[in-house]
Length: 197
Image (cartoon, one colour):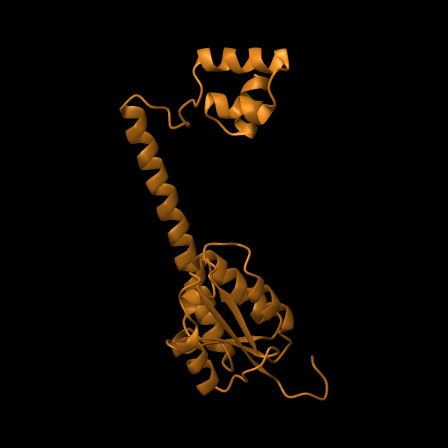
């Protein structure tokens, strides 16, 4: 726990594209009491929520201490998926850090441990439901593909003629791997996979 300092409100903002701006989120966070400085306000500009690598969020989470509250304007700014959100909320709860969601206070966990437990339970159930739906859709798609004569694997990028040509060029040493890959229309890693067969 931070000693000699008041507990802090730490804000996080994210927009998915470089041409969007965070002004609406910033205004909401400032009204909620987040200070407008680099210690209290973190941003990811032009970073998709689907990306695992979000430097602003990483720095934000690293700055949080027990008793602090992470403040976001909207929940979707925070997590890549429901499962990711559940994991993050659980981690923060274990560290004694609350989360405040400004556009939906019922999703907030700051200052209310009973509500936090309820919300984590609901999130967990929804994340499991989401995983089950994805698994079910995948299985239905594979069954349908098999019924149409496909086995669900990726189609081959190179036919036997191109594989032979690539192997011949590689063995002859007349071209660099990148040039061979370009000549047969695949990436270098794909070329190496075919050469290894």
